[in-house]
Amino acid sequence: MAEKITIGELHLSGCTGCLVTIADNYEGLFKLLDDYADLVYALTLVDTRHVPEMDVCLVEGSCCLNDELSIEELKEAREKSKVLVAYGACAAYGNITRFCRGGQWNQPGHEAFVPISEIVDVDLYLPSCPPCPQMVRNIAVMAYLLLKGNDEQKALATAYLTPLMQLAKRGDTACGCDLMYDVINQGLCMGCGTCAGTCPVRAVTMEYGKPNVNRDQCIKCGACYSQCPRSWFNFDVMNNYEGIINAIKGAMQ
Amino acid sequence: MDVLGNYKSVISARSTDKDILKKSQDGGIITTLFAYALEEGIIDGAIVAGPSDEPWRPEPMVATTKAELLAAAGTRYTISPNLYLIKEVTRSYGFDRVGIVGTPCQIQATRKAQVYPIGLRDVDDKIALALGIFCMENLSYQALEAIVEDHCNQKMESVKKMDIGKGKFTVYTERGAVSQMPPKLIHKYVQPGCHVCLDYVANLADISSGSVGSPDGWSTVFVRSLKGNEVWEGALAAGLFETKPIDQVKPGLDLVKKLATEKITKNQKHVDERKTVGIRADGTPKGLRNPYESP
Ligand SMILES: Cc1cc2nc3c(=O)[nH]c(=O)nc-3n(C[C@H](O)[C@H](O)[C@H](O)COP(=O)(O)OP(=O)(O)OC[C@H]3O[C@@H](n4cnc5c(N)ncnc54)[C@H](O)[C@@H]3O)c2cc1C
Ligand code: SF4
Ligand code: SF4
Ligand code: SF4
Image (cartoon, rainbow over all chains, first blue to last red; front, side, top):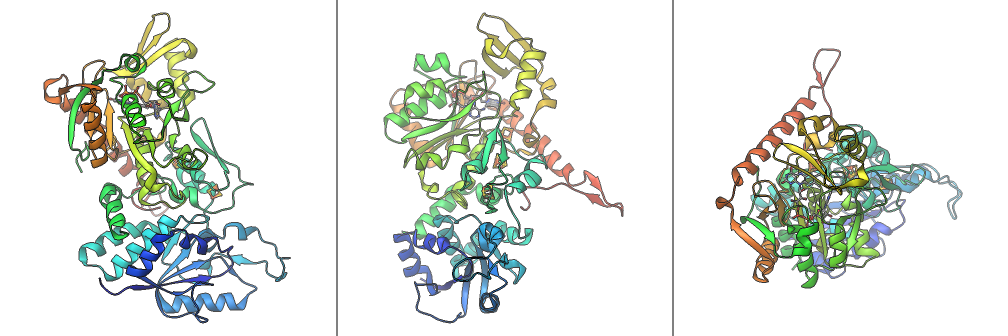
């Protein structure tokens, strides 16, 4: 086994659901930590005060502009990590924090929250509220293959991670409306229902086979958009679904 | 990749279950396989296109009995957003082994959900059997209504079966009338999302099936994955299907290949043309999104 990669979780303005999601891999988390990644920084899980150097930094939460420490830590994390991931909907798109208007105990002045890409460059997006534990596992395994694998493994990991890197380039907003703008209005929707099945707050319903978004209910997590097969679909990876699922399963055994 | 996708075997087949054949669209492959998988504990239930309160409008449904599978058998040529239930089925129903049937695009969605489970927690390893149905194009409900009621002059509620084959769209009514129209008239009603579709025979399914290639009442069946092979071999051993080698039936695999090639060529051209739909002020082309290139 090649040496492990180092992973950290930087906690900004989020609900800690993303952090808990890492742990929701249960025994898989131990496997990841035994063989692939050392967790070098994470709220409550690692006893480290200051942002260390790391290969992959998962940033949870949006960045509060009223909180200088958040801005400083985010910049520091960018400088010290090879791959910076907007981990979860708040970091990627603002999510529910878009609607925060301060007045919260014990920081009543905190009211301006931006997705982290408004402060630093982000390499990769993992949207959804929270992202799925299985996706954290997949990204950890792929990041390991990318940084420590042989040429073939590097190619596989690059192909796998590319759409998530492209999502980071796409911009820092995504909500149910993006289904309308970038999929339906673009003549791409074919009515599979994935978006409605994915939405964590049931803001999407299917009317005569097409999604209808209740915009007041949408929290801007971007899950529907990123899970939609017509927002992006990479044949080179998906055509090899059996191989990829087996590779990840094999890595976790 | 080949227009027919990767597959381990292809065969012409028909269910040996008379009840299923009475209700199914073609050889009853999908309903028979799900009934077998339920019986064997391979799946706890399957997401199928169930009935709704409007005639011929399917609604995704979780079937856990053969009776429910039979209620959902047959083809509705309009959208049934089956993936809508993909998370629900592991939550409210609590299933660990899920079956799902879908058009090629829906099987693509299923595989994306497994390979990139971004917002579909604890779903990826619970897809136990993904069955695909061949698909040239699909229609909105209102489009189907226009075709049946305006072009074929039949009431939706009086229709017993609809079928596309041998160059015709055909509706059979309860009272024995048969109305037909040429499929080329359907073209303008096809939902736009189908024009960028690059899969005819559900390349990513465990097993996929359609009528094309086989004689009336029979189906062409592609066995594609290891999982699919296991289930297919089991069902054959249990005597659930009659089979014929595909090279001994008419019109055979050549027609499947021809139609698949036509669909993919036409739609690839459409995808390419989207790049230059518009024009910028400086005279260079301005395009629409290509979902196969980037988000
Ligand atoms: C829109 C559409 C276009 C098709 N085009 C072709 C074609 O060009 N060539 C070809 O050979 N075959 C085509 N088919 C497939 C064909 O009509 C049959 O569905 C297939 O042969 C299976 O028949 P069966 O007797 O094995 O299945 P059955 O035992 O009758 O079971 C069919 C299953 O499909 C499900 N289903 C029905 N309608 C839908 C729907 N709209 N969306 C998702 N699931 C559905 C049912 O719930 C059922 O579980 C098309 C099907 C659809 C829905
Ligand atoms: S997931 Fe995408 S393609 Fe499927 S119904 Fe929703 S918007 Fe349409
Ligand atoms: S519609 Fe639902 S899934 Fe989509 S962004 Fe809004 S909350 Fe998220
Ligand atoms: S043509 Fe393609 S996109 Fe349209 S319903 Fe069939 S499989 Fe789906």
